[in-house]
Length: 184
Image 1 (cartoon, rainbow, N blue to C red):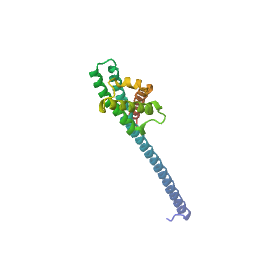
Image 2: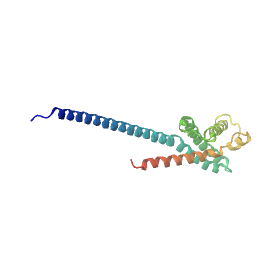
Image 3: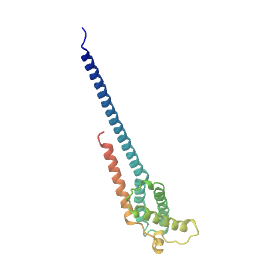
Image 4: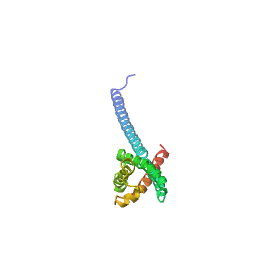
């Protein structure tokens, strides 16, 4: 039995339309998959950046600032021997903070207050200069470095710097934990 000619044309049209629809669905699915891959790659880059931000800048600076705070409080009223040992320990922590600020400042939040980086760096570099004068060059003075900073009217430790680094490191840790706990 022979099929009417019109039926063959209808079948061919239906097959062509089906192929076009399948191609459109396939293209849309591929575009959607590409978007998902791009979002996934963007999220991976963001998490990697935030992790580096935390581990290379905020957390080390925060921890060194906590150490310097603890050392500084033991420095006041101590005898000369203890005072010298504390200043040597402070020097190591201050040097680490300066290194972090100089080498990882790209991770600093764009809206970070000047006291968190610029003022802190200026204070630590002044402290370093006085440390060198006291211990590495011809001893220029015997008083504790913090007394010399005050005597010379050098910039004091910026009040908000430590709080900024402590708060930001805490917030970045929270953000990273939230991302890692979120269902995929």
